[in-house]
Image (cartoon, rainbow, N blue to C red; front, side, top):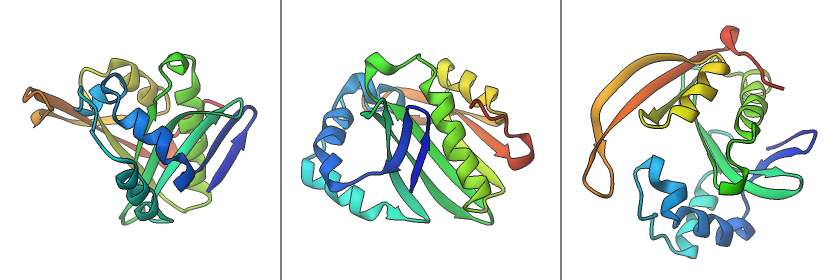
Length: 175
């Protein structure tokens, strides 16, 4: 996959990205919202295995770039029945809260709806991640449920998850 819009690029993750992904995934500041405030503790070879595994049209790990520099990663996977699940992390902390997330998500969602034939996109987020919720709702996602005490983070603290879905007809592009 390769999606380009102005200064933004979404492309397939490559084994050459493993070192940077390892750095990001082992950084607790980047991974705290996903339940890993101490980072993943993942090795370079383990990252390479993830990249190799997530390289099909049904399950793909993607890199995001702004101005030709990597700023984060995103992914999607098919759940069947015309539904895809997505995820996104702006991993370069200096690039967060600059509007990249809504633009990059718009690029991916548009492509999943128009080129890959999906009818619905789902995701979940930590209830404490208000910034992400604002972006998702701006794109047209609807809250479908809140799951109290859905999972425990690395510190053994209960976390609440919010489930969202986006129907193709409700998508509001931010490009």
